[in-house]
Image (cartoon, rainbow over all chains, first blue to last red; front, side, top):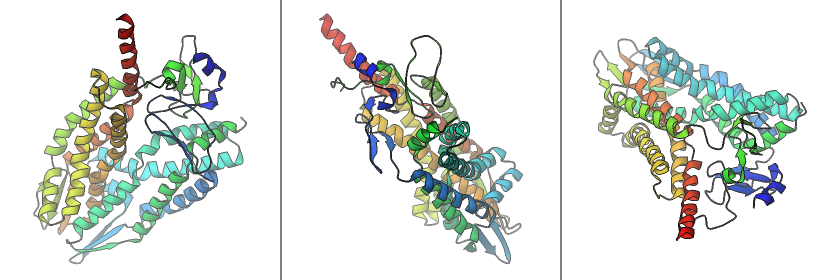
Length: 210
Length: 221
């Protein structure tokens, strides 16, 4: 067995990241997945036209980022007074109440990571498409893998829903323009991640001439 | 389980998987650290110190779980009146207010998910350490589940950050965060780190060693 393995080149073998099984790589068509036969982990999935789609979707997401973060998401009116919330304001308010650690976590997961991830994917798309900046592309791919788990816009969306239901009996509660921008940003983030073919990007980044 | 002779693992075959870019490379024979030829990341057969790291992160999360549930997470002051709410009393208030689906949602995200994560990761760690003969397939599914649901516990924290600015009406109504929320944020971060520091390949390593030992026994008898 060992001698047979020696003859195979590295790229023709895959290792399952969940159970360490050696799997022979095969050519897969667009939209197909390579699945570990032992633990059923998805090793990779070929996503069609990944680079172009990631570029378009991440750029759209980036354009929505500033309105989503600065326009009011909800507005509450009660006996003549009114107040509204934006994503950034929530963080500022937590800091002013002295909860800096929680404020940092909310800022990190709902503002910083989502925008950094979109920026990374956009620059990555450019680097791969233009075939330039090999070192940059490799570091960006590494950082994307490290931070993407901490982007939690979809959980924030659920937070908005729960806050809305909780407060709707308190006074007049209206959705603001920020909510529309936020939902757009959320959709773009989800779609960018669905179109991002990590395996393909790593191969393309590796092919860029240094 | 490993009756199929074609089922060989990377550690046996002398192959290393890059955790960063998933490139497979051959382990060097000479001593010294291995680096990924594509992305230069440090390579190791299994995540270094996975078990100890996961245990410590888990212990920290269990410690923080107490203050997270005992201290109030937020206080709603309505016309000068109001009392602090803990996670559990918040859920109970929602139930009394007739908002059953939302109460259920908050209960799942803030109580059920953290507890299930702590139990789930403990079971995984004990399975590896004690060699419990649980189905490796099901343990792996549980591991993926634990990794996936962790983020949803942030729901309560996001909701608080929304409410503190949304309900900021001076004398009429205000909402402030509480110390419990800080502790709860710690629980979420530590359990997420614990889940990602656990190496599920350790589960499957058990699968390999069991038949080998039984083969040895068969040979000696």
